[in-house]
Image (cartoon, rainbow, N blue to C red; front, side, top):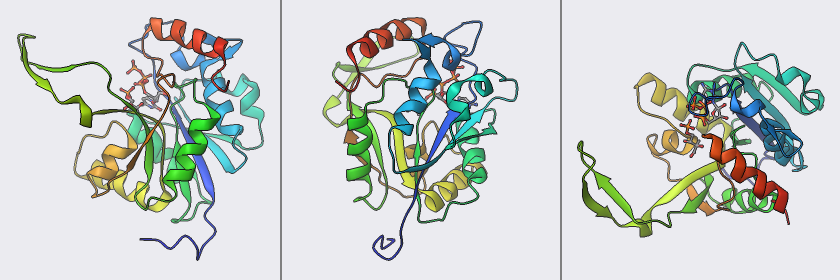
Length: 238
Ligand SMILES: Nc1ccn([C@@H]2O[C@H](COP(=O)(O)OP(=O)(O)OP(=O)(O)O)[C@@H](O)[C@H]2O)c(=O)n1
Ligand SMILES: C[C@](O)(CO)[C@H](O)COP(=O)(O)O
């Protein structure tokens, strides 16, 4: 375990924003769609820029995306961009590799461009509790529905105990060196990675689950934009 008292660990942020939003089905990738006076991605990045501890925000963009550079947030001195990859995990790896100033003991927050309703309180809770936990931490929300396991015929064959189930959100907070090593390990062994925690778990880690707001939704389908509009109208920080 790294003794944080011996080193001053800086805090970086990575924003995976290279997706195409195929499930959303809009003409534009969903992160560039209008939401409450800005674009989706601008809300997601604004939540990170409101955290003064963050040293730099590195955004992983699709090679075809020319929209980002026109946004106000792209001109912020803390915001940089890099070309992402074909999968989210690859985009995160490429962004981490571009953080040339980061030390292995520094912390990295990874936050989806597609999660615009992140509150300042949730960022602070993750940082406070996550940096006390040696193996990192993620924002997560408890599962509130009864959960069924279905078979190939979509028949319910089992009710899963939901008391131990959580929905992984973002940001997710890990040490820079450990996260890079875990993602490299999973890539080299063709292990499935859908979030940073799944890479860390397969690399022997046990990230802490920090309960976050159910309002921190991921924009995936059109209805999610309607929901996010209502959440932002109510003020995610109120
Ligand atoms: N190759 C990829 C794929 C996804 N992402 C980002 O990872 C986040 C979560 O991914 P998801 O919701 O799946 O976005 P998309 O891949 O765009 O959605 P879809 O699967 O519907 O195409 C998004 O901010 C997305 O831009 C990324 O940086 N690089
Ligand atoms: C990272 C994530 O948002 C945590 O729930 C989720 O895994 C992203 O999944 P996607 O299929 O890439 O949207």
